[in-house]
Amino acid sequence: MQLDAVILGAGPAGLAVANAMVSAGAQVKVIEPAGRPGGSIRTIHADGWLVETGPNTLQIEGENDQALLERYGLAEVLQEADHASAQRFILSKGKLHALTNQPSSLFKGDLLTWRGKLRFLSEIFRPRGGHAEETVQAFMTRRFGAEAADLLMDPVVSGVHAGDPGRLCMANSFPSIPALEASHRSVILGLMRQPPKGRRIIGFPSGMQQLADAIAAPLRDGALELGAMATLIRRDARGWNVAWRNAQGQEDGATAKHLIVTAPHWQWASLPFDEELKKTFREWERAEAPPVTVVARGYDRAAVAHPLDGFGYLIPGNEKRQILGCLFPSTVLPGRSPQGKVLLCCFIGGARNPALARQTDEQLRALVDRELAETLGVSGPPEKEWIQRWERAIPQYGVDQTRREAALARAEAKHPGLHFHGAFRGGISLMHVIRAGDALGQALAKG
Ligand SMILES: Cc1cc2nc3c(=O)[nH]c(=O)nc-3n(C[C@H](O)[C@H](O)[C@H](O)COP(=O)(O)OP(=O)(O)OC[C@H]3O[C@@H](n4cnc5c(N)ncnc54)[C@H](O)[C@@H]3O)c2cc1C
Image (cartoon, rainbow, N blue to C red):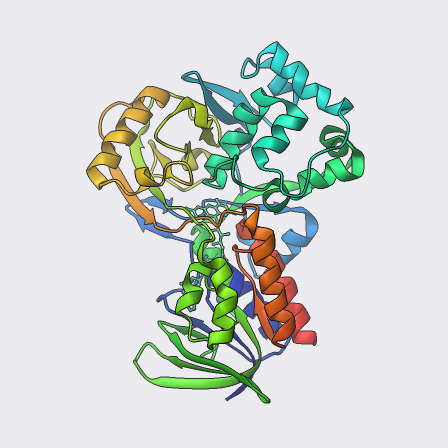
């Protein structure tokens, strides 16, 4: 079988590449070990609950993202996040502090002291500085002061990236922020001067799996091989020869111009590459992706004292709590819980506390009971509970990420037709891997 591309992995990254190529008339084969497309997307439908134990929402920016979702046939079904979810809470000294996307909420509230607020604002007058390997903690402290670094950025890094701001590299993890410093001297001035990005938080009536299924929809006639594993990968003059074992245990194979690796980096050592390529992956063996356990719970509305009038809450590391944060999915999107019930979703573990994610179900239950009682005034046991363990959750872009990405770029330059794309490189968010996957697929289909 002669193809244009073989794609390893049917997560959002691989699906986006495949969709773009097939839509442009290319012949592809996607090899995926799991029995369904979507990778880290985990949507559960149970007794009127719609629970996501992987990504909960998609953050889109501007018309191009909207157009891409329209191309996937999702225009009519997009669910906009409720306006209440523009409010987010930060837990500090045992109290939830509300912040909105209006800067005034930071200055009116008492999350930062007046000294901390002044130091934050003085960012406007600070000179450029820093270096390419500066950590998130160092960058934020230098520009905005220690208080803002600890109370504003730290909870985002630990809640969204499951990371440690003292180890993540600013330029690799949040490249647009140092870019503002480089171009405008001040991040605040840069933000004020740039046109609005048109950011929206969205979901889908049947959950995130609906997104994966829509991207996978054009992969007909065996283009998506579920339950399959690659058994051999070799390159010769005709291109990339890939053999795989399908879900029925039969051997099959193809030769393709392009081979796109979208399986997560911790799987690369087990892929059947030759020894020379495997050497490239050694750089990636120590690339961190710490464990996170998600505990989602359904409660009767009356059992939760807090109004849940927001997206959820995040927790700075110096609070020394045992969870990273808690989302309020039934506030954010419609149809997540039956009438009169609410859904809460807690994240535990991450780079700073990997051992917590590996606790037993009983230990996790006790920890979540305590946390939700203290912070949201939850009383009594949940009506429903779902526990999802991610032994490797989110790739961490530390200072070594630059060297590792350079190794991939060298391998791609040396081996024509070889490409790597996924959350391990360039950006960890769902919309990023889809957007960049679409661009890669379109470029390969043309070339
Ligand atoms: C708990 C959690 C919550 C998250 N929340 C959000 C959120 O709210 N918003 C957001 O934007 N992002 C979120 N993310 C990040 C988002 O899930 C990722 O950006 C996205 O899934 C990355 O897509 P991917 O295709 O690169 O990798 P994955 O989704 O990991 O997919 C990789 C695919 O490769 C397959 N594979 C594995 N081994 C092999 C092999 N040997 N051969 C071939 N294929 C293989 C896997 O089975 C999988 O299907 C979250 C992630 C986690 C873990």
